Amino acid sequence: MVINRDFLFAFCCLLLAMVTIQSGASIAKQLFPHVGPEGTTAYRLGFSAIILWLVFRPWRKLPTNWRPILIYGLCLGGMNITFYFALERIPLGVAVALEFTGPLAVALFSSSRKRDYIWVVFALIGILLLLPDITKVDGLDPVGVLLALVAGACWAGYILFGKQSGSQGSGGVTVALGMTVAALFLVPAGAISQGQALLNWELIPLGIMIGLLSSALPYSLEMVALRNMPAQGFSIMMSLEPAIATIAGLFILGEVLNFWQSLAIVMVIIASLGSSLTGQKAA
Figure 1 (cartoon, helix red, strand yellow):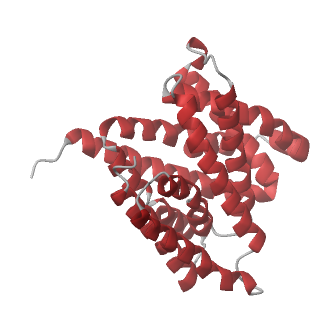
Figure 2: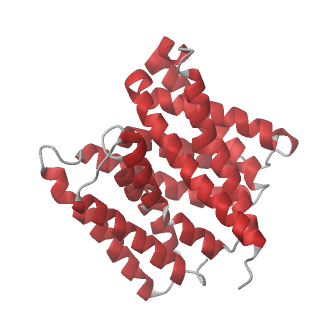
Figure 3: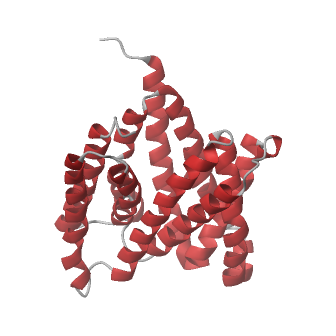
């Protein structure tokens, strides 16, 4: 069997992108006691915007219609801040699985085939499996669960308006401009909230690392992967991200999930995989 080198290269890029973004999230969670989720978001968006501007140089081709870019950037910022607030309260693997309901909803509701709605059932089962855990005293924080779902809704908006924004230029320019919009709103908010703590020279290198691992590097790797593999293959691989998040949470943060939490993540992964496998025509 001959292995397509371009596909293998894309596979490695996408796998590295998923590992880096979840490693960045794990490092970000360790910063919460020092600068909180809002300060960590300021680090991520601020440094990501700087890195992306240096890499993609968006000033060379600015868009003519800024409205979708602004909404895209606000969705990107909302996705980041609500996810980090959720991550402060619930394990990384659970937060990513719940956040995945956003892009999953976009994929499923763009399909005109009724049989695809079976994957909605799997996703709902995954969410429902977490409900008994919410009622326990030492179980999942319900506010954290709700925030992760809100982050998923923001992710859905990020996808929809990112598509509109991307029609005006390259994906790299779109991401750089959207990240800048998000940073303009949330970096000042983080600075007001955390003040001098953000200027701690021991934390700034970690902030740069979060910006690189969580946004700049994985977004760039994903674009390379998309150029060298079919969209369906890309979606199938991305479906594994909740599993990678669970592994990162276990080995970096020491977060051990119980049986029902793990089963819920598996249900979301099945829903996402099923949607990717059957949604080629809709895509």
